[in-house]
Length: 169
Image (cartoon, rainbow, N blue to C red):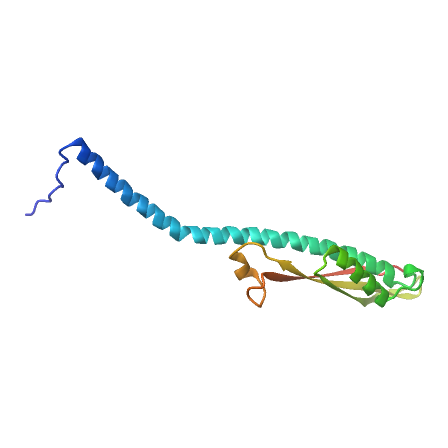
């Protein structure tokens, strides 16, 4: 039967302190290695959450801009728009002029969609459908690699917003 041997007891207080010091160094090294393994994953997760918040803000901005552009287009595209009969081409020109002031990198287009017939006014009813395409800039490192559109390295995500509004007659 073998007897398990215990390590020898330290003879002096100095030897006891040295043994505790070596154990702390080994634990500190383990914590450093664990931190180096977990930190990049944690930072990527944190940056992805912040980037999604950034994209949410830019999407809200694009929705509001599209609403304002649809409002402009609905007032101008009708037969009484700007006192000259308006029309879709004039509405598109006014919307493009307005979007350059709001979001300079965005593109806007409008089209008329038939929605029915107004029996009282004896005219067809139409909606203007406004489409805004906005290249949103990604600002956080690492997350842009996951969230960006092709080509990789552009650090942009294209947001497309559509809105319909009745044309004023």
